[in-house]
Length: 219
Length: 219
Image (cartoon, rainbow over all chains, first blue to last red; front, side, top):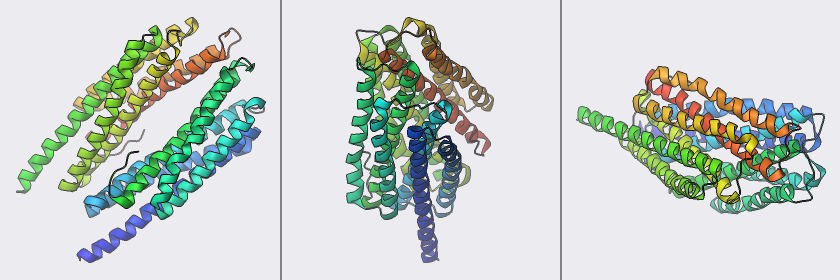
């Protein structure tokens, strides 16, 4: 009987992991569409990103409900308990990442048919968007295989995003910046959303480390 | 024996609630100091807010550890389990609120001895800061007494903050806005931080409702 319970529990843990992977894939797609919408004033992509953001929120809540049902039925302790609590935290971060990417898409939609990105910042935002998408893809892989080396590698990779975020401010605050306040507001917020998206990837990867080591490693 | 366990559990739940109240009090103090630092270029208050933000982060993590220990020892189900999961979520929000308020203080510290708020926006940010502090105080009360009517009242109260947030953009994007990009960046981010702080209060109050009704009410 105890063995049977254990078997069911293992299957449930796999289901939780699969759903985290699925959230991460969706969040990456949202960022991909949002970045493209933002850079190319593509309102169709913006709409798709925003719609996926709403689905993402529902799916994250549904996953939380699943985790709570498992906690109630299985009363796990030690490592198993921590895996499930980590899953709740990771799901909250993935929900937030979807919202942040949607906000980028909303800026593009709001400014359409005008562009939200002045030419002086196209290169910076192109790189930021690519990095965020790449981080999203790595996160998906990491959630799939919980490889510790990969988790550590990701934790160093948001540095370039932080650098680009500071770079946006350098450009905006330089004397050469002649854009109007609308551009300044849009790029300030968009840069912040890109940076927070990468922050969440780093946060999650430190929690994934835990899943394998059995110890919290909040950075 | 079971009765004894139940007694211990009830005491532990009270401990969790007390710590949530304590976090909420600290977060309100951080916002109070941050708002004052931001409006008056008071670098001393800014430092205090930032230091309290760090303490807040540690205390939130310590509370999470306590909740996980209780989950492991007591294996609660149904309502008790949901209370503890809610506590984890509320603690994450309170941690984030401390960080957001600290960011406002950091802007003030960074611009010191200059002001980060142009005169055209002093009234708006004064009201925003006061509203956030008032929401923080109401949240503390709510966590203390888990009164459903109070929870519902709070859920309507971030509307004025959202309105002020839009108002900041109206002022910044008007033809009359003559401030440089530095001011534009600072007020855009500061306004966003104030708005997110209020968002978290609303989020938490919908989770507190649950504590009494036994049903999730994610808005």
